[in-house]
Amino acid sequence: MSLAKIPHTQVKIQDQFWSPRQRTNAEKAVPHQFKMMEDHGNGRNLRRVIQGVRTGFEGFWFADSDMYKVIEGISSTLHHFPNEEYLDEMNVWIDEIGKAQDSDGYINTFYQIKKPDKKWTNLRHDHEMYCLGHMIEAAVHHAQITGKQNFLNIALKVAEMLNTLFGPDGEVGYCGHPECELALMDLCEFTGDSKWRVLAERMLMNRGSHLFAREEGIPDDQYDGTYALDDVPLVDHQTIKGHAVRAAYLFSGAADLARTGEAPGVLPMLERCWQNLMERRIFLTGGIGPSHDNEGFTVDYDLPTFSAYQETCASISLAMWGYRMMLLTGESHYMDAAERALYNAVLSGVGLDGISYYYDNPLASDGTHRRQPWFDCACCPPNILRTIGRLGQYAYAEDKDSLIVNLYIPGEVATKQSSWRAEGEMPWGGKMKYTLLETQGGLAAMKFRVPEWAGAVTLTKDGTSVTTEPNELGYIVVQGPYQVGTVIDLKFEMPIRQVTAHPAAKELTCATAFQRGPLVYAFEEIDQPIPIEESLVLLLADATAVWEPETLGGCIVLKVSGVKSPRPAESQLYRPVADTASVELKAIPYALCANRANSPMRVWMPSLPGR
Ligand code: FUB
Ligand code: ZN
Image 1 (cartoon, rainbow, N blue to C red):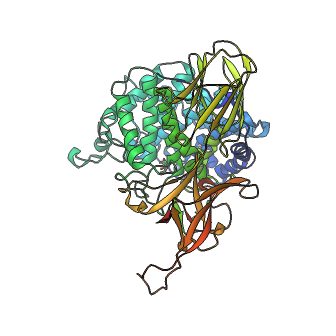
Image 2 (cartoon, rainbow, N blue to C red):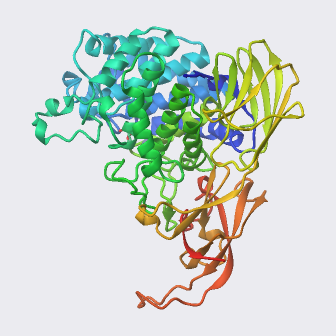
Image 3 (cartoon, rainbow, N blue to C red):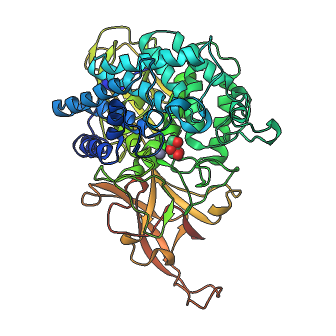
Protein backbone atom coordinates (compact mmCIF):
# COMPACT_ATOMS: atom_id res chain seq x y z
CA MET A 1 0.00 0.00 0.00
CA SER A 2 1.76 3.14 -1.07
CA LEU A 3 1.22 6.56 0.41
CA ALA A 4 1.25 10.10 -0.93
CA LYS A 5 3.67 12.80 0.15
CA ILE A 6 2.71 15.88 2.08
CA PRO A 7 5.32 18.44 1.04
CA HIS A 8 6.93 20.70 3.60
CA THR A 9 5.10 23.64 2.06
CA GLN A 10 1.99 22.28 3.78
CA VAL A 11 3.70 21.83 7.12
CA LYS A 12 4.56 24.62 9.53
CA ILE A 13 7.06 23.76 12.22
CA GLN A 14 6.54 25.66 15.48
CA ASP A 15 8.49 24.01 18.25
CA GLN A 16 11.44 24.50 20.53
CA PHE A 17 13.72 22.04 18.80
CA TRP A 18 13.52 22.43 15.02
CA SER A 19 12.09 25.96 14.72
CA PRO A 20 15.27 27.62 16.02
CA ARG A 21 17.25 25.48 13.54
CA GLN A 22 15.04 26.53 10.66
CA ARG A 23 15.31 30.16 11.69
CA THR A 24 19.10 29.93 11.95
CA ASN A 25 19.08 28.27 8.56
CA ALA A 26 17.26 31.29 7.16
CA GLU A 27 19.11 34.01 9.01
CA LYS A 28 22.62 32.62 9.17
CA ALA A 29 23.11 29.66 6.87
CA VAL A 30 21.51 31.18 3.78
CA PRO A 31 23.75 34.29 3.66
CA HIS A 32 26.74 32.16 4.65
CA GLN A 33 26.16 29.69 1.85
CA PHE A 34 25.59 32.45 -0.71
CA LYS A 35 28.97 33.80 0.33
CA MET A 36 30.66 30.40 0.22
CA MET A 37 29.46 29.91 -3.34
CA GLU A 38 31.25 33.10 -4.32
CA ASP A 39 34.30 32.65 -2.08
CA HIS A 40 34.93 29.15 -3.35
CA GLY A 41 34.50 29.95 -7.00
CA ASN A 42 31.21 28.21 -7.83
CA GLY A 43 29.78 31.50 -9.08
CA ARG A 44 32.98 32.38 -10.93
CA ASN A 45 32.93 29.01 -12.70
CA LEU A 46 29.53 29.90 -14.17
CA ARG A 47 30.79 33.29 -15.29
CA ARG A 48 33.86 31.72 -16.89
CA VAL A 49 31.61 29.54 -18.98
CA ILE A 50 29.41 32.48 -19.93
CA GLN A 51 32.47 34.48 -20.99
CA GLY A 52 34.04 31.56 -22.84
CA VAL A 53 37.05 31.44 -20.49
CA ARG A 54 38.71 28.03 -20.66
CA THR A 55 41.02 28.29 -17.67
CA GLY A 56 40.83 28.68 -13.93
CA PHE A 57 38.08 26.21 -12.97
CA GLU A 58 37.80 26.23 -9.18
CA GLY A 59 36.81 23.47 -6.81
CA PHE A 60 35.95 19.81 -7.17
CA TRP A 61 34.70 18.50 -10.49
CA PHE A 62 31.19 18.22 -9.06
CA ALA A 63 31.18 21.76 -7.62
CA ASP A 64 28.09 22.67 -9.69
CA SER A 65 26.06 20.29 -7.55
CA ASP A 66 26.79 22.41 -4.47
CA MET A 67 25.24 25.46 -6.04
CA TYR A 68 22.16 23.51 -7.07
CA LYS A 69 21.76 22.16 -3.55
CA VAL A 70 22.20 25.64 -2.14
CA ILE A 71 19.41 26.86 -4.43
CA GLU A 72 17.21 24.01 -3.26
CA GLY A 73 18.04 24.79 0.36
CA ILE A 74 17.39 28.49 -0.05
CA SER A 75 14.13 27.88 -1.89
CA SER A 76 12.83 25.67 0.90
CA THR A 77 13.98 28.11 3.56
CA LEU A 78 12.45 31.10 1.79
CA HIS A 79 9.08 29.42 1.81
CA HIS A 80 9.05 29.57 5.59
CA PHE A 81 11.04 32.80 5.99
CA PRO A 82 10.33 34.96 2.92
CA ASN A 83 13.12 37.30 1.91
CA GLU A 84 12.97 39.28 -1.36
CA GLU A 85 16.65 40.11 -1.34
CA TYR A 86 17.68 36.45 -1.26
CA LEU A 87 15.10 35.60 -3.89
CA ASP A 88 16.61 38.22 -6.21
CA GLU A 89 20.12 37.01 -5.48
CA MET A 90 19.10 33.46 -6.28
CA ASN A 91 17.49 34.60 -9.52
CA VAL A 92 20.78 36.14 -10.59
CA TRP A 93 22.38 32.71 -10.25
CA ILE A 94 19.53 31.09 -12.12
CA ASP A 95 19.96 33.58 -14.96
CA GLU A 96 23.64 32.79 -15.04
CA ILE A 97 22.98 29.06 -15.05
CA GLY A 98 20.67 29.62 -18.03
CA LYS A 99 23.34 31.61 -19.83
CA ALA A 100 26.00 29.00 -19.13
CA GLN A 101 23.81 26.23 -20.54
CA ASP A 102 24.76 25.10 -24.06
CA SER A 103 22.11 25.15 -26.75
CA ASP A 104 21.70 21.36 -26.54
CA GLY A 105 20.93 21.61 -22.82
CA TYR A 106 24.39 20.63 -21.58
CA ILE A 107 25.82 22.34 -18.54
CA ASN A 108 28.74 21.30 -16.39
CA THR A 109 31.23 24.04 -15.69
CA PHE A 110 34.07 21.59 -15.02
CA TYR A 111 33.77 20.08 -18.49
CA GLN A 112 32.82 23.31 -20.22
CA ILE A 113 35.94 25.01 -18.89
CA LYS A 114 38.45 22.18 -18.77
CA LYS A 115 37.56 19.60 -21.38
CA PRO A 116 34.66 20.65 -23.58
CA ASP A 117 35.44 17.96 -26.16
CA LYS A 118 35.37 15.11 -23.66
CA LYS A 119 31.79 15.28 -22.35
CA TRP A 120 30.24 11.98 -21.19
CA THR A 121 33.54 10.09 -21.53
CA ASN A 122 33.98 9.25 -17.86
CA LEU A 123 30.57 8.51 -16.40
CA ARG A 124 32.09 6.48 -13.58
CA HIS A 125 34.08 9.28 -12.10
CA ASP A 126 33.03 12.65 -13.37
CA HIS A 127 29.56 13.18 -11.91
CA GLU A 128 27.96 14.95 -14.89
CA MET A 129 24.59 13.27 -14.32
CA TYR A 130 24.98 13.63 -10.56
CA CYS A 131 25.29 17.40 -10.94
CA LEU A 132 22.39 17.53 -13.35
CA GLY A 133 20.32 15.40 -11.00
CA HIS A 134 20.89 17.92 -8.27
CA MET A 135 19.89 20.64 -10.70
CA ILE A 136 16.66 18.86 -11.58
CA GLU A 137 15.82 18.21 -7.93
CA ALA A 138 16.53 21.83 -7.07
CA ALA A 139 14.60 23.19 -10.04
CA VAL A 140 11.52 21.13 -9.25
CA HIS A 141 11.69 22.37 -5.71
CA HIS A 142 12.26 25.96 -6.77
CA ALA A 143 9.24 25.78 -9.06
CA GLN A 144 7.09 24.26 -6.31
CA ILE A 145 8.03 27.01 -3.90
CA THR A 146 8.17 30.09 -6.09
CA GLY A 147 5.71 29.10 -8.79
CA LYS A 148 8.35 30.34 -11.27
CA GLN A 149 9.32 28.36 -14.34
CA ASN A 150 12.73 29.93 -15.00
CA PHE A 151 14.87 27.27 -13.32
CA LEU A 152 12.53 24.44 -14.24
CA ASN A 153 12.81 25.34 -17.94
CA ILE A 154 16.59 25.05 -17.72
CA ALA A 155 16.23 21.69 -15.98
CA LEU A 156 13.71 20.46 -18.53
CA LYS A 157 16.20 21.23 -21.28
CA VAL A 158 18.76 19.20 -19.37
CA ALA A 159 16.33 16.32 -18.95
CA GLU A 160 15.46 16.36 -22.66
CA MET A 161 19.16 16.18 -23.49
CA LEU A 162 19.63 13.27 -21.11
CA ASN A 163 16.67 11.54 -22.68
CA THR A 164 18.11 11.97 -26.16
CA LEU A 165 21.49 10.63 -25.07
CA PHE A 166 20.50 7.92 -22.60
CA GLY A 167 16.75 7.41 -23.03
CA PRO A 168 15.04 4.56 -24.90
CA ASP A 169 16.56 5.63 -28.24
CA GLY A 170 19.98 6.42 -26.83
CA GLU A 171 23.02 4.76 -25.33
CA VAL A 172 23.16 2.84 -22.09
CA GLY A 173 24.33 5.40 -19.57
CA TYR A 174 24.21 5.94 -15.85
CA CYS A 175 26.30 7.94 -13.47
CA GLY A 176 29.03 6.72 -11.12
CA HIS A 177 27.20 8.62 -8.41
CA PRO A 178 23.45 8.00 -8.35
CA GLU A 179 21.20 11.03 -7.83
CA CYS A 180 19.80 11.65 -11.29
CA GLU A 181 17.41 8.72 -10.87
CA LEU A 182 15.61 10.13 -7.85
CA ALA A 183 15.64 13.59 -9.39
CA LEU A 184 13.98 12.32 -12.56
CA MET A 185 11.38 10.61 -10.41
CA ASP A 186 10.72 13.99 -8.76
CA LEU A 187 10.43 15.58 -12.19
CA CYS A 188 7.97 12.89 -13.27
CA GLU A 189 5.85 13.44 -10.17
CA PHE A 190 5.88 17.21 -10.58
CA THR A 191 5.23 17.41 -14.31
CA GLY A 192 3.12 14.26 -14.62
CA ASP A 193 5.25 13.28 -17.63
CA SER A 194 6.01 9.55 -17.45
CA LYS A 195 8.92 10.02 -19.87
CA TRP A 196 11.08 10.94 -16.89
CA ARG A 197 10.17 7.77 -15.05
CA VAL A 198 11.14 5.73 -18.09
CA LEU A 199 14.50 7.47 -18.22
CA ALA A 200 15.07 6.94 -14.48
CA GLU A 201 14.09 3.31 -14.90
CA ARG A 202 16.65 2.86 -17.68
CA MET A 203 19.39 4.34 -15.51
CA LEU A 204 18.37 2.16 -12.58
CA MET A 205 17.93 -1.06 -14.47
CA ASN A 206 21.00 -0.76 -16.69
CA ARG A 207 23.18 -0.29 -13.63
CA GLY A 208 25.21 -3.36 -12.87
CA SER A 209 25.96 -3.99 -16.53
CA HIS A 210 29.59 -3.09 -15.80
CA LEU A 211 29.45 0.02 -17.94
CA PHE A 212 32.31 1.54 -15.98
CA ALA A 213 34.55 -1.44 -16.69
CA ARG A 214 33.92 -1.07 -20.42
CA GLU A 215 34.45 2.67 -20.17
CA GLU A 216 37.90 2.15 -18.69
CA GLY A 217 38.88 -0.98 -20.59
CA ILE A 218 39.00 -3.10 -17.43
CA PRO A 219 38.53 -6.82 -18.18
CA ASP A 220 35.30 -7.98 -16.64
CA ASP A 221 36.96 -10.55 -14.42
CA GLN A 222 39.15 -7.85 -12.89
CA TYR A 223 36.37 -5.36 -12.35
CA ASP A 224 35.01 -4.56 -8.92
CA GLY A 225 31.99 -2.34 -9.34
CA THR A 226 31.00 -2.44 -5.68
CA TYR A 227 31.95 1.10 -4.76
CA ALA A 228 29.53 2.58 -7.29
CA LEU A 229 27.00 -0.27 -7.03
CA ASP A 230 27.77 -1.33 -10.57
CA ASP A 231 28.69 -4.85 -9.49
CA VAL A 232 25.33 -6.54 -10.06
CA PRO A 233 21.99 -5.57 -11.58
CA LEU A 234 19.84 -3.50 -9.25
CA VAL A 235 17.48 -6.28 -8.24
CA ASP A 236 20.36 -8.64 -7.38
CA HIS A 237 21.82 -6.69 -4.47
CA GLN A 238 21.82 -8.89 -1.38
CA THR A 239 23.41 -6.54 1.15
CA ILE A 240 24.03 -2.84 1.48
CA LYS A 241 27.52 -2.06 0.26
CA GLY A 242 29.76 0.39 -1.53
CA HIS A 243 29.81 4.14 -1.07
CA ALA A 244 27.11 5.05 1.45
CA VAL A 245 25.59 8.09 -0.26
CA ARG A 246 25.69 6.38 -3.63
CA ALA A 247 23.86 3.35 -2.18
CA ALA A 248 21.11 5.26 -0.40
CA TYR A 249 20.52 7.72 -3.27
CA LEU A 250 20.31 4.79 -5.67
CA PHE A 251 17.86 2.94 -3.45
CA SER A 252 15.85 6.13 -2.94
CA GLY A 253 15.37 6.41 -6.69
CA ALA A 254 14.53 2.69 -6.83
CA ALA A 255 11.92 3.09 -4.08
CA ASP A 256 10.29 5.93 -6.02
CA LEU A 257 10.27 3.75 -9.13
CA ALA A 258 8.58 0.91 -7.26
CA ARG A 259 6.05 3.28 -5.70
CA THR A 260 4.92 4.67 -8.99
CA GLY A 261 4.44 1.56 -11.11
CA GLU A 262 5.74 -1.82 -12.17
CA ALA A 263 9.24 -2.57 -10.96
CA PRO A 264 9.68 -6.35 -10.68
CA GLY A 265 12.14 -7.46 -8.03
CA VAL A 266 12.85 -3.97 -6.76
CA LEU A 267 10.88 -4.05 -3.50
CA PRO A 268 12.30 -7.42 -2.33
CA MET A 269 15.81 -6.15 -3.08
CA LEU A 270 15.18 -2.95 -1.12
CA GLU A 271 13.76 -4.89 1.80
CA ARG A 272 16.78 -7.22 1.84
CA CYS A 273 19.31 -4.43 1.82
CA TRP A 274 17.34 -2.42 4.36
CA GLN A 275 17.21 -5.41 6.70
CA ASN A 276 20.95 -5.98 6.37
CA LEU A 277 21.53 -2.32 7.16
CA MET A 278 19.21 -2.23 10.16
CA GLU A 279 20.37 -5.49 11.65
CA ARG A 280 24.11 -5.19 11.10
CA ARG A 281 25.38 -1.93 9.67
CA ILE A 282 23.65 1.21 10.93
CA PHE A 283 25.09 3.32 13.72
CA LEU A 284 23.04 3.94 16.85
CA THR A 285 22.70 7.53 15.72
CA GLY A 286 21.10 6.56 12.41
CA GLY A 287 24.21 7.35 10.41
CA ILE A 288 25.65 4.99 7.83
CA GLY A 289 29.03 4.21 6.33
CA PRO A 290 31.76 3.39 8.86
CA SER A 291 34.80 3.75 6.65
CA HIS A 292 36.78 6.76 5.59
CA ASP A 293 38.48 4.78 2.80
CA ASN A 294 35.43 4.27 0.60
CA GLU A 295 33.20 6.73 2.45
CA GLY A 296 30.97 3.75 2.85
CA PHE A 297 30.22 0.25 3.97
CA THR A 298 32.64 -2.49 4.89
CA VAL A 299 31.45 -5.67 6.59
CA ASP A 300 28.67 -6.56 9.00
CA TYR A 301 29.06 -5.20 12.53
CA ASP A 302 31.90 -2.84 11.64
CA LEU A 303 30.69 -0.03 13.88
CA PRO A 304 33.69 1.91 15.15
CA THR A 305 33.48 4.94 17.40
CA PHE A 306 36.54 7.21 17.03
CA SER A 307 36.85 6.41 13.35
CA ALA A 308 33.11 6.27 12.59
CA TYR A 309 32.89 8.16 9.30
CA GLN A 310 29.13 8.69 9.22
CA GLU A 311 29.26 11.36 6.55
CA THR A 312 26.52 13.94 7.03
CA CYS A 313 25.32 13.38 3.46
CA ALA A 314 25.11 9.65 4.14
CA SER A 315 22.86 10.16 7.15
CA ILE A 316 20.71 12.49 5.04
CA SER A 317 20.55 9.88 2.30
CA LEU A 318 19.41 7.28 4.85
CA ALA A 319 16.58 9.57 5.94
CA MET A 320 15.64 10.09 2.29
CA TRP A 321 15.62 6.37 1.62
CA GLY A 322 13.70 5.47 4.80
CA TYR A 323 11.09 8.13 4.02
CA ARG A 324 10.62 6.71 0.54
CA MET A 325 10.37 3.16 1.89
CA MET A 326 7.59 4.32 4.19
CA LEU A 327 5.81 5.92 1.24
CA LEU A 328 6.27 2.78 -0.83
CA THR A 329 5.14 0.20 1.73
CA GLY A 330 3.04 2.21 4.16
CA GLU A 331 5.10 0.66 6.99
CA SER A 332 5.95 2.91 9.89
CA HIS A 333 9.22 1.27 10.97
CA TYR A 334 11.07 2.90 8.09
CA MET A 335 10.41 6.22 9.77
CA ASP A 336 12.00 4.93 12.96
CA ALA A 337 15.29 4.89 11.11
CA ALA A 338 14.64 8.17 9.31
CA GLU A 339 13.77 9.80 12.63
CA ARG A 340 16.86 8.35 14.29
CA ALA A 341 19.03 9.79 11.54
CA LEU A 342 17.36 13.20 11.45
CA TYR A 343 17.51 13.83 15.21
CA ASN A 344 21.04 12.54 15.63
CA ALA A 345 23.52 11.89 12.83
CA VAL A 346 21.99 14.44 10.45
CA LEU A 347 21.52 17.25 12.92
CA SER A 348 24.99 16.73 14.31
CA GLY A 349 26.21 17.82 10.86
CA VAL A 350 25.58 21.48 11.69
CA GLY A 351 26.50 23.55 14.72
CA LEU A 352 24.00 25.59 16.72
CA ASP A 353 25.39 28.65 14.93
CA GLY A 354 24.03 27.26 11.64
CA ILE A 355 27.28 28.04 9.83
CA SER A 356 29.71 25.39 10.99
CA TYR A 357 29.54 21.88 9.64
CA TYR A 358 30.73 18.36 10.16
CA TYR A 359 31.59 16.28 7.15
CA ASP A 360 32.23 13.13 9.18
CA ASN A 361 30.49 12.53 12.48
CA PRO A 362 32.50 10.25 14.77
CA LEU A 363 30.95 8.72 17.86
CA ALA A 364 33.95 9.50 20.04
CA SER A 365 36.53 12.21 19.85
CA ASP A 366 39.53 13.51 21.70
CA GLY A 367 38.01 16.97 21.49
CA THR A 368 39.79 18.14 18.36
CA HIS A 369 37.03 17.20 15.92
CA ARG A 370 35.35 20.54 15.32
CA ARG A 371 32.84 21.78 12.78
CA GLN A 372 34.21 23.83 9.88
CA PRO A 373 32.71 26.77 7.96
CA TRP A 374 33.16 24.94 4.64
CA PHE A 375 35.03 22.13 2.92
CA ASP A 376 36.93 21.75 -0.33
CA CYS A 377 34.57 18.84 -0.98
CA ALA A 378 31.50 20.80 0.01
CA CYS A 379 28.68 18.29 -0.41
CA CYS A 380 27.53 18.23 3.23
CA PRO A 381 26.79 21.89 4.13
CA PRO A 382 24.28 22.51 1.33
CA ASN A 383 22.78 19.10 1.93
CA ILE A 384 22.04 19.98 5.53
CA LEU A 385 20.71 23.39 4.47
CA ARG A 386 18.13 21.78 2.22
CA THR A 387 17.32 19.02 4.69
CA ILE A 388 16.51 21.40 7.52
CA GLY A 389 14.64 23.65 5.10
CA ARG A 390 12.49 20.75 3.91
CA LEU A 391 12.25 18.96 7.24
CA GLY A 392 8.46 19.24 7.42
CA GLN A 393 8.09 16.81 4.53
CA TYR A 394 9.13 13.94 6.79
CA ALA A 395 6.41 14.59 9.35
CA TYR A 396 3.27 13.48 7.49
CA ALA A 397 1.95 11.37 4.64
CA GLU A 398 -1.54 10.51 3.45
CA ASP A 399 -3.54 7.80 1.84
CA LYS A 400 -6.93 8.12 0.20
CA ASP A 401 -8.79 8.98 3.36
CA SER A 402 -6.35 9.26 6.23
CA LEU A 403 -3.66 11.55 7.47
CA ILE A 404 -0.57 9.77 8.69
CA VAL A 405 1.60 11.25 11.40
CA ASN A 406 5.18 10.04 11.19
CA LEU A 407 7.21 12.58 13.12
CA TYR A 408 5.92 14.33 16.20
CA ILE A 409 6.70 17.97 15.58
CA PRO A 410 4.56 20.78 16.97
CA GLY A 411 3.17 23.16 14.35
CA GLU A 412 0.45 22.89 11.70
CA VAL A 413 -0.35 20.75 8.72
CA ALA A 414 -2.84 21.46 5.95
CA THR A 415 -3.99 18.87 3.42
CA LYS A 416 -6.82 18.84 0.90
CA GLN A 417 -9.00 17.12 3.51
CA SER A 418 -8.10 18.77 6.78
CA SER A 419 -5.88 21.14 8.74
CA TRP A 420 -4.50 20.34 12.15
CA ARG A 421 -2.61 22.09 14.88
CA ALA A 422 -0.03 19.94 16.67
CA GLU A 423 1.12 21.05 20.11
CA GLY A 424 3.39 19.34 22.55
CA GLU A 425 6.72 18.70 24.08
CA MET A 426 8.50 16.60 21.51
CA PRO A 427 11.30 15.65 21.48
CA TRP A 428 11.77 16.50 25.15
CA GLY A 429 8.57 14.88 26.36
CA GLY A 430 6.11 12.44 24.84
CA LYS A 431 2.84 14.41 25.04
CA MET A 432 1.24 15.66 21.85
CA LYS A 433 -2.16 17.23 21.19
CA TYR A 434 -3.74 17.41 17.73
CA THR A 435 -6.65 19.81 17.16
CA LEU A 436 -8.66 19.80 13.97
CA LEU A 437 -8.75 23.36 12.62
CA GLU A 438 -10.58 22.84 9.34
CA THR A 439 -12.12 20.00 7.45
CA GLN A 440 -13.17 19.73 3.85
CA GLY A 441 -14.62 16.25 4.38
CA GLY A 442 -13.23 12.91 3.30
CA LEU A 443 -11.01 12.31 6.31
CA ALA A 444 -11.84 8.86 7.65
CA ALA A 445 -8.94 8.29 10.03
CA MET A 446 -5.85 9.70 11.63
CA LYS A 447 -2.93 7.30 11.89
CA PHE A 448 -0.13 7.77 14.39
CA ARG A 449 3.21 6.04 14.14
CA VAL A 450 4.21 4.21 17.31
CA PRO A 451 7.90 5.06 17.59
CA GLU A 452 10.36 2.31 18.45
CA TRP A 453 11.49 4.34 21.46
CA ALA A 454 8.04 4.66 23.01
CA GLY A 455 7.10 3.06 26.31
CA ALA A 456 3.42 2.87 27.24
CA VAL A 457 1.11 4.77 24.91
CA THR A 458 -2.22 6.39 25.70
CA LEU A 459 -4.56 8.16 23.31
CA THR A 460 -7.88 9.90 23.69
CA LYS A 461 -10.17 11.41 21.09
CA ASP A 462 -12.27 14.18 22.57
CA GLY A 463 -11.57 12.71 25.98
CA THR A 464 -12.53 9.14 25.10
CA SER A 465 -9.82 6.48 25.19
CA VAL A 466 -8.96 4.82 21.93
CA THR A 467 -7.06 1.55 21.58
CA THR A 468 -3.39 2.13 21.01
CA GLU A 469 -2.72 -1.31 19.60
CA PRO A 470 -0.99 -0.50 16.31
CA ASN A 471 -2.21 -1.95 13.03
CA GLU A 472 0.00 -4.31 11.03
CA LEU A 473 1.81 -1.32 9.54
CA GLY A 474 2.76 0.12 12.91
CA TYR A 475 0.18 2.90 13.21
CA ILE A 476 -2.49 3.58 15.81
CA VAL A 477 -5.65 4.16 13.78
CA VAL A 478 -8.11 6.73 15.12
CA GLN A 479 -11.31 6.49 13.13
CA GLY A 480 -13.54 9.48 12.41
CA PRO A 481 -15.94 11.17 12.37
CA TYR A 482 -14.02 14.38 12.59
CA GLN A 483 -15.44 17.83 13.23
CA VAL A 484 -13.62 21.11 13.64
CA GLY A 485 -12.40 21.24 17.21
CA THR A 486 -11.84 17.48 17.56
CA VAL A 487 -8.88 16.95 19.86
CA ILE A 488 -6.60 13.94 19.95
CA ASP A 489 -4.32 13.69 22.97
CA LEU A 490 -1.45 11.35 22.67
CA LYS A 491 1.12 10.35 25.22
CA PHE A 492 4.18 8.23 24.67
CA GLU A 493 6.13 7.30 27.76
CA MET A 494 9.69 8.31 27.05
CA PRO A 495 11.91 6.12 29.20
CA ILE A 496 15.66 6.54 29.27
CA ARG A 497 17.00 3.53 27.45
CA GLN A 498 20.45 2.24 28.18
CA VAL A 499 21.66 0.00 25.37
CA THR A 500 24.47 -2.37 24.61
CA ALA A 501 25.41 -3.63 21.17
CA HIS A 502 25.32 -7.08 19.60
CA PRO A 503 28.49 -8.94 20.67
CA ALA A 504 29.56 -9.21 17.05
CA ALA A 505 30.06 -5.44 17.02
CA LYS A 506 33.54 -5.89 18.43
CA GLU A 507 34.38 -2.22 18.93
CA LEU A 508 31.37 -1.85 21.18
CA THR A 509 32.28 -4.71 23.50
CA CYS A 510 31.53 -3.81 27.13
CA ALA A 511 30.24 -0.41 26.11
CA THR A 512 26.89 1.17 26.76
CA ALA A 513 24.97 4.16 25.39
CA PHE A 514 21.86 6.12 26.28
CA GLN A 515 18.78 7.19 24.40
CA ARG A 516 15.65 9.05 25.34
CA GLY A 517 12.87 9.53 22.86
CA PRO A 518 14.41 9.97 19.42
CA LEU A 519 17.64 11.36 20.84
CA VAL A 520 20.88 9.51 21.35
CA TYR A 521 23.05 10.97 24.09
CA ALA A 522 26.76 11.59 24.42
CA PHE A 523 29.16 12.45 27.22
CA GLU A 524 31.38 15.47 26.76
CA GLU A 525 34.26 15.86 29.16
CA ILE A 526 33.32 19.47 29.79
CA ASP A 527 30.24 18.25 31.69
CA GLN A 528 31.97 15.63 33.84
CA PRO A 529 33.52 15.96 37.27
CA ILE A 530 36.46 13.81 36.11
CA PRO A 531 38.31 13.23 32.83
CA ILE A 532 36.32 11.22 30.33
CA GLU A 533 39.09 8.62 30.14
CA GLU A 534 38.56 7.90 33.82
CA SER A 535 34.77 7.65 33.53
CA LEU A 536 32.84 4.44 33.38
CA VAL A 537 29.14 4.01 33.63
CA LEU A 538 27.29 1.26 35.38
CA LEU A 539 25.25 -1.24 33.50
CA LEU A 540 21.71 -0.66 34.69
CA ALA A 541 22.83 2.81 35.67
CA ASP A 542 20.56 5.14 37.58
CA ALA A 543 19.70 7.80 35.05
CA THR A 544 17.43 10.79 35.31
CA ALA A 545 16.30 13.30 32.72
CA VAL A 546 16.68 16.94 33.73
CA TRP A 547 15.63 20.03 31.77
CA GLU A 548 18.49 22.54 31.69
CA PRO A 549 17.32 25.82 30.18
CA GLU A 550 20.83 27.25 30.10
CA THR A 551 22.51 24.32 28.40
CA LEU A 552 22.90 24.50 24.63
CA GLY A 553 19.82 26.62 24.09
CA GLY A 554 17.77 24.52 26.49
CA CYS A 555 17.79 20.75 26.46
CA ILE A 556 17.13 17.66 28.52
CA VAL A 557 20.35 16.24 29.88
CA LEU A 558 20.77 12.84 31.47
CA LYS A 559 22.38 12.44 34.89
CA VAL A 560 23.90 9.00 34.98
CA SER A 561 25.54 7.03 37.77
CA GLY A 562 29.12 6.13 37.00
CA VAL A 563 32.42 5.36 38.59
CA LYS A 564 35.90 6.77 38.42
CA SER A 565 38.64 4.49 37.26
CA PRO A 566 41.81 6.47 37.89
CA ARG A 567 44.16 6.91 34.96
CA PRO A 568 47.16 4.60 35.21
CA ALA A 569 50.71 5.88 35.22
CA GLU A 570 52.18 6.28 31.73
CA SER A 571 54.45 3.29 32.33
CA GLN A 572 51.54 1.06 33.30
CA LEU A 573 50.18 -0.60 30.21
CA TYR A 574 48.32 -3.09 32.32
CA ARG A 575 47.51 -2.93 35.99
CA PRO A 576 45.34 -4.54 38.59
CA VAL A 577 41.79 -3.28 38.75
CA ALA A 578 41.89 -0.18 40.95
CA ASP A 579 39.46 0.98 43.58
CA THR A 580 36.62 2.89 42.08
CA ALA A 581 34.62 5.81 43.42
CA SER A 582 31.06 6.74 42.49
CA VAL A 583 30.52 9.80 40.33
CA GLU A 584 27.56 11.40 38.62
CA LEU A 585 28.09 11.79 34.89
CA LYS A 586 26.10 13.96 32.53
CA ALA A 587 25.08 13.33 28.93
CA ILE A 588 23.75 15.76 26.33
CA PRO A 589 22.04 15.01 23.01
CA TYR A 590 24.66 13.74 20.56
CA ALA A 591 23.52 16.22 17.93
CA LEU A 592 24.44 19.11 20.23
CA CYS A 593 28.02 18.03 20.90
CA ALA A 594 30.98 20.24 20.03
CA ASN A 595 29.07 23.49 20.44
CA ARG A 596 31.12 24.64 23.41
CA ALA A 597 34.84 24.51 24.15
CA ASN A 598 36.88 21.63 22.71
CA SER A 599 36.01 18.60 24.76
CA PRO A 600 36.59 14.88 24.40
CA MET A 601 33.32 13.08 23.72
CA ARG A 602 31.92 9.55 23.83
CA VAL A 603 28.58 8.10 22.80
CA TRP A 604 29.59 4.62 23.88
CA MET A 605 30.96 4.50 27.41
CA PRO A 606 32.92 1.67 28.93
CA SER A 607 30.69 0.01 31.44
CA LEU A 608 30.82 -2.04 34.61
CA PRO A 609 28.21 -4.31 36.08
CA GLY A 610 26.39 -2.21 38.64
CA ARG A 611 23.80 -3.43 41.09
O1 FUB B 1 30.87 12.57 -4.80
C1 FUB B 1 29.93 13.53 -4.38
C2 FUB B 1 29.90 13.57 -2.88
O2 FUB B 1 31.18 13.93 -2.39
C3 FUB B 1 29.63 12.25 -2.22
O3 FUB B 1 28.29 11.96 -2.06
C4 FUB B 1 30.33 12.40 -0.92
O4 FUB B 1 30.54 11.18 -0.27
C5 FUB B 1 31.59 13.12 -1.31
O5 FUB B 1 32.55 12.22 -1.77
ZN1 ZN C 1 28.70 15.13 2.13
